[in-house]
Amino acid sequence: MRRHRLDRPGTAPMAWIALVLLLAASVIAQFGVGAEAHFDIERWPGGMALFGVAAAAAGVLAAWLLGRLLGRRDDYYDDDGR
Image (cartoon, rainbow, N blue to C red; front, side):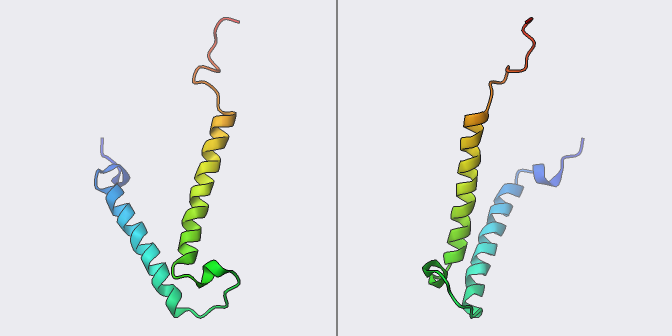
């Protein structure tokens, strides 16, 4: 069976490198765009990238907490004869 390209061992490091390059490009592009800042974090170099990473981490944490709160055991739906 042929493996999908996302299953290959070298794919994860390439994805991380691409992510870091995109974040660096967004920080560099911030210097070329003159926009009015409404919040202090918008004035920091890379502030919006930092905000995006923090928001994504908060989303993952919230999903993990919901999973722990609403999750069931692996055998929850097993037929135990009742």
